[in-house]
Length: 401
Picture 1 (spheres, rainbow, N blue to C red):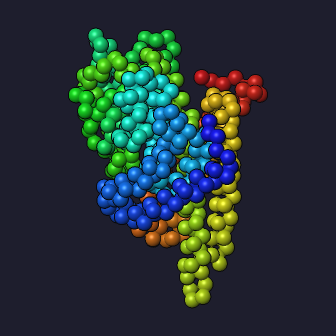
Picture 2 (spheres, rainbow, N blue to C red):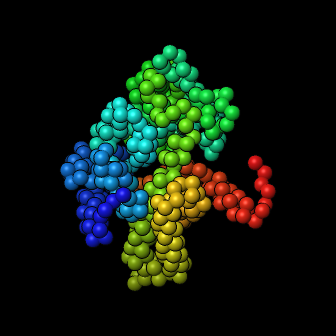
Picture 3 (cartoon, one colour):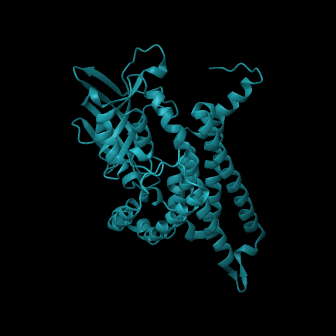
């Protein structure tokens, strides 16, 4: 838990904003030429961020992070969300942020030294592999990838896709079935740490997202495991704890994501307002004088403010009661904020006209990559069902399994 005073935290946010200002000029090249075109510039700014002691703000100080509280990091995530490169700049991007938290909670000493510390230090990146093309991604209990213990090794066979961040990463955390005969479905899966150069781990392709394959942590890969031998010592936590670990990872992750989405909303809203104030539609008349555009601005402002307060409240509830105790609040923000994000982006694109769907500005990038907000980490429909079922139980409604 951070001990920063309000004044110190405001100073920290101001300093972070200064680093973001150095990042904004790189966005145009990133949009047109990709991440590799600005790699050297990013390394330079990242080195400054690291030297300032601002890497991994969500992680504890004893492992090299800043030690911010969940609520403090939520506000940081909102700020960094203003740029698609913001979280990477401060080494708290997905999926690495969630993997760091998992490793911190469950890694043994050897795993901490080999995987966690280099990840927190920004010396490598990681990936996460759970979703399978053969099964519904919204059901983490239904997996076909298996890890069978033979001697001191697990032999892994299976198929994964939408494995975020595999491109350029050093290792992945795999969700796989190790105990198929377990009485409870929640106790059949485990997590393994697998270096990406392990024989039998095959990178099939990067899955294109709305026409774009992406790079680094902005990419998603299809993977196959063919008699891939993984040392038993690479088991993360205990056998059969995979589902438990996944839930530990997803709870804080949803807070991070939602605040990042609000950061995107804030930037898109500013672009919307700037366009409305300056785009001439006829001599002496600007777009913002149209009532429909004024409605977009008012509705967006209200929705962003409501979403922000909901997420901060959910973060407070989670800090007090844990992920399980804040289950309803977490599901509420997951589908509500994702919907607000798409509405605000859509209005901003509409206000920019043809420019809005081009890659000359950020809006089309976010629209492509963030449409998944309503799908990953639990589809909207799943979270709505969670909320409704919890509420209906209080009214004595017997629900079908």
